[in-house]
Image (tube, rainbow, N blue to C red; front, side, top):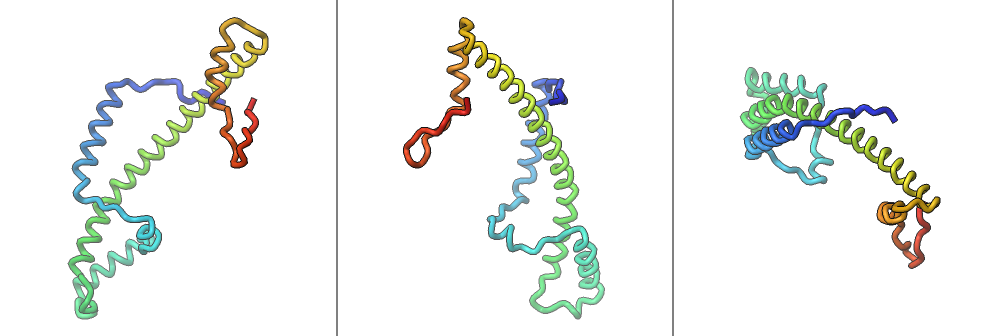
Amino acid sequence: MDNKINFTIPDEVITEVTQKLNEVASVLQPYLIALTPEERRTIPKMSDKTVPFVEKTLEYCQTAPQFAPPYMDREGLAGDMKVTEQLTPLLRTVTALNDGLDDTVMEAGGESYVNALSYYNSVKQATKMNVPGAKSIYDDLKKRFEKTKSGNGDPKPSAD
C-alpha cells in the first residue's frame, strides 16, 4: 500500500476548522429542514436538466400569470427557487469538502490498519517463537479477531 498520508494536521488547524464549521452550521440551522427517508424517496428531484425548466416556468408565471392555476402559489415557487439557487453552491462546496475528507480518512485509516496488521503479525510470529513479552501483547491484540458465538451457541472459529 502506498503511503499517501505522510503528514499530520496541526491541532490549531483542526480547532479552527471545527469552530468555523460549527459557526456555519449554527448560522444555517434555522433555514435547514430534515426529511424522513420516505420523503426523500418520494419527493420529485430537481436535477441540472430540470433547473432551466423551473426557471422558465417562473419567468412565465411573471410574464403570463393568467395561465397559472388558481391553486398554484407563484410566490412560493419564486421563494423555493431562490432558496435552491442560494443553497446549491453551498451544497457543492460542502460535497467537495466531504469527498476530500472521506477519501483522506479512508486512506489514513487503511494505512493505519495495514501497519497495525503488520505489527500484529510480527507479534503473532514472535509469540509462536516464544519471544519474551510477545504473548501478552498478542493476547491483547488478538481480541480484535475473535468471533462471537454463532446462533446455535457454538463458538465460531478464530481468524488465527
